[in-house]
Image 1 (tube, rainbow, N blue to C red):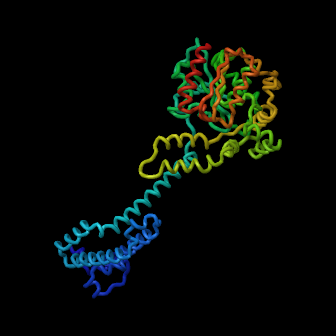
Image 2: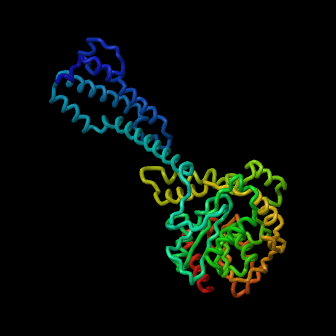
Image 3: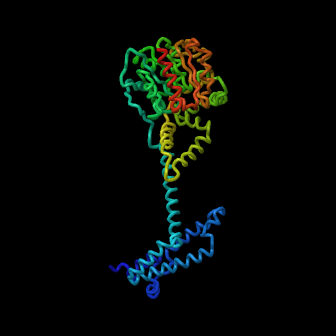
Length: 467
């Protein structure tokens, strides 16, 4: 085959990087002049990059040595022309010798290997950035899901009732988890395979486990208030049997407490975790925000949502409590996990699970939200015996069942005092009150691995003891 013919204009043009050729040059230098080839242009670019390296590496960088550069250029030009001549003359022996010289000469290889390394490094950076963006925007493409097998056994306007225990023993009390209702999906109670509260409760021997699944409020629900949610909770409690064990997480804690005060005969035990029972206790950020805000601020948020409280506004408020963590540090940690050929797979799985849950939101009824702000946070009506639930004035003293209080030592949303101060107001005998302080922040109370393994195991044992 004559593919090595030096008079092949297309090949010569491809090697030289231009279409200007003359017969004499093609005969003498069939590959053209290396100094004007596109290979040399790439090599020059690599030189320039090497010239821009930091001073700290200057002594170790041969590209900054002018004598070396001149010598290196001469070697390359000579080798290039030897190979070109051999190809033009179809000299297999000479071609093999030239290729062998290249393979055995580290100096000849260095510009190409350096360029290759640079290209590989740039490619890795591009791959890292793409992967970073995929994870940073994962919540745009995925919604939170329940991970533990369950079946929906009840559907009402406010929420669904999910049954997690495969079989129901009607001789034993049911346990109903009340998740937070603060702008996020209820799946925090079943966060992941290894971080599922409902699964851990079943593993610890709790029978008949159920969980509420809150619906995102629609415009038709804008006037729903706390009574509407209490009434629908009561329907489900009747369905699964009286003497229920209630477990309230965050907002679910005061919700369960008010329900227990209204229907004390229907609750066997009550657990609250990270729940602001006494909203005036301590010096909390949320409480200070409510106290210092213009009274119309929260109602205006509801108006912006056309009658509902947009969950995105709720999450924005939580983020603004720790802006560096949510807007800077989170992404710095993410980039470290994807940087390089080996990812932090375990860390990325945790990041993805949390991002999907945290960044996806549900809406709250405007009336419900304003009532919570005004009656519970601003005026603390439940603790002061001034809250009316389903037509009846209720008080924490009406809670007489065994009650367990769980707080987090790093919780900046619900301070430990706001949880533990419930002991001052409830009617439960002292020997029937359990307390635990977990080494966790707010969300970690509901799905942190160490908290699930230690604190919730103790709570499960406490529930079984009080049956």
